[in-house]
Length: 411
Image (tube, rainbow, N blue to C red):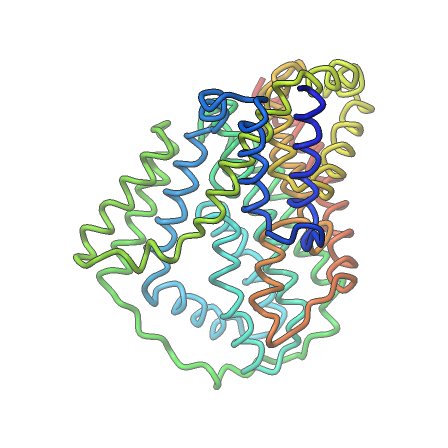
């Protein structure tokens, strides 16, 4: 039975990891669902075991944050903000910096994938109107959104899993992760200047941009509700139900059928996560993961330099082979055994998130940017890779020491 579970896991991850799996081209969500069904059908897990394997807090938080983001971005508020930034930037270089910082800040609270879904069409329109090269701005959007999402427990799906599994308070995680994320973002801006400053024109033509009209009442309400949700996170309230409370306020204020909002949710992502939890639970049921961890344990001591290097290399490689979300799921049960659980959880979040910047296929946010801009610009794998390798390595080199130092200062 153990080898049956291992075979199901391998087949599922072949479908999940490869973008177009020719033998069974059903896509990632369906692949995870098929794997989960197979785990139960072959007797590896009982239906009760499968239900228990799903992390319901993570699913609830992901659902709540997607719906909250859909409510906040429904009006013209963020679109108007983007246009104001363009008009005030003054130069193409300052616009690139503003885009990078805005994407990072919003991704910390609105989920990086959603920020990229919203901003990519705006970036395309802005660059086309102003005659700017699309490549630098698209790459800056994707990589900065990934970096910013490392800062909080709601910035990306893998951090949501870490928040649920670790039980770490939102404020505590933020306190530990913010310095490293800020340093990584500063390095990101420096690299953007090195790579792209000479490719940008000296002036930005703002005459092509008209001032946007903001839906005042609803936009302000959405802003205050969003701030209230963040305050709830910081106060230690249950994150999933706090997000739903914010959604409830906005739905009542909206006073119309929310079917359109629900249709904008990425339901396939929820199916993907639920199926993946069951597949990973089936693999953990075999004992293979525990045996592998016991063997690798001596090499992953986060109190030593070689342990830090081994930990980082393992999760950078794994995040780009099977994606960062599955890697976090597999690592979850044994992170507490690494001697310093708080540091291990925050470092796991930071490394797996930053690893998503390595290649164009390293994170869903990258794929979102590439796909949503495809009609206007073909963002190539190698074009992205040149900057992706630089920002990933630099972010890890400067960010990890800050992460460790912060952990020591906090005790």
